[in-house]
Amino acid sequence: MENDTIAAVATANGIGSIAIIRLSGAESFSIAKKLSKKENFQNRYATLTNIYNADGELIDESIVIYFKGPHSFTAEDVVEIQCHGGYIVAQSILKAALDAGARLANAGEFSKRAFFNGRIDLSEAEAISQLIEAKSEDAAKILAAQMKGSLKEFIEQVRDEIIHILAYSEVTIDYAEEDLPTDLVAQIRAKLDELYKLLQKTLMASQSRAGLMQGFRVAIIGKPNVGKSSLLNALLNYNRAIVSDIAGTTRDTIEEQVKIGTHLIRIVDTAGIREADDEIERIGIERSLDAIKQSDIVIALFDGSREADDEDSQIVELLHAHAADKEKIIIKNKVDLPQKFLLEGMDFDLELNSKEDVSSLVAKLQAIMDSSNSSDEIMLISERQISAVRETMRNIEEAYEPLESQELEIFSFHLNEAVKAMASITRPFENDEMLDKMFGSFCLGK
Ligand SMILES: Nc1nc2c(c(=O)[nH]1)N(C=O)[C@@H](CNc1ccc(C(=O)N[C@@H](CCC(=O)O)C(=O)O)cc1)CN2
Ligand SMILES: Nc1nc2c(ncn2[C@@H]2O[C@H](COP(=O)(O)OP(=O)(O)OP(=O)(O)O)[C@@H](O)[C@H]2O)c(=O)[nH]1
Ligand SMILES: [K+]
Ligand SMILES: [Mg+2]
Image (cartoon, rainbow, N blue to C red; front, side, top):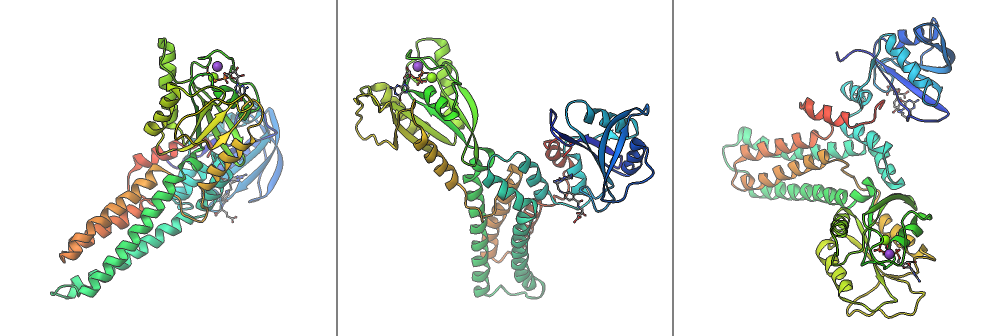
């Protein structure tokens, strides 16, 4: 049933001072009264009250807030029970709510109801879901704006523009047998060009900011013993990886999360890359190549205290082959030792002693990550949104030819499809399966 009353714990599971149980649906109010043995709750007031289980035993002293629909998060009757945190209390209250007739909510079901009741559109729902998982302050800012409708406004603007162009041409289909005047065709073409460029710019800005939104991935690569694990430890500020003077110490990739500036990033330390002696090392090296492919930023380390050899040249080749489209930071390490490294045509971005001070690298990483943000642009934040914009662009492309050849019905067909594709970002027509999948990826209680 779609209109039953749903319940979930909305806060993270674990020790914390306060937890919230959320109820939405027609029975919320009566369930709240039953759990508290109270006669009434004033709409949108915080009320301190005891909460009891089905046997009438005290569970907790809580704060209850009743939001009478439609003025609530879901636009239905909503009740929040703010109780003591930890593993037990919130679960006991949830169980009491289920005993009193609520059903356990599915992931994302509160947001889904807010969407179906028209309180938020799909672009706003996606923004809320991603805001919870934001990996940087910049990402959070963009998502907060989108939660308040920035993408919705952009879509309406594009949609209005296409409809305007359609109106231009359709006037002529209706009451003219003759062709569109050539100056009008030129005007429409110019408008299409402008629109197409705007969408392309948005698409490109979104792609270049993927790291910003998903959290940057940084891979540290180099031949054995250049100091990759030492560098990881220095960036993390603790001895996560084993460091030794034995080449081949790191046999598998090691992945850790660390905050640099306002960014939460994943750093991957890899097995040194060289001709492998054994099977395990060979697998480790394959993983290193994968780590490069999956990263946004590649840190390539070279040992300044040793003469350059074929293995160093191989690393350089590998950077060309597999990291051409990535941000790269090329580092000469061990500069505290007498220097012997020389490789023709090799330029270093930084010189380091990875056991001492890595602040210059931290600053460089931060600069790269900050530069991927240009905050005032519109951003597409999901594959769904990106493919809708691609579909819009494809239809605009296909409208050019019929415009030139004066096949105006085909021209309007494509522009109508473009409007539909654009509108699907905020309000898809059908496709329940897609909606189930999307809301199902949200947090429980969201
Ligand atoms: N306790 C609590 N904190 C929360 C939420 C919540 O649901 N409960 N939120 C949940 O994600 C966020 C806030 N978002 C919300 C958005 C709209 C409404 C709401 O009741 N809207 C009504 C009334 C509007 C008004 O009073 O101006 C409406 O739009 O009609 C509630 C929360 C973050 N903090
Ligand atoms: N003097 C000096 N020694 C360093 C520096 N960085 C690392 N080392 C030493 O170099 C050796 C190798 O360091 P690791 O961090 O294990 O090197 P790695 O690149 O992870 O090596 P593999 O995991 O074997 O590929 C260790 O003895 C480190 O103490 C540095 O900047 N200066
Ligand atoms: K080593
Ligand atoms: Mg290592």
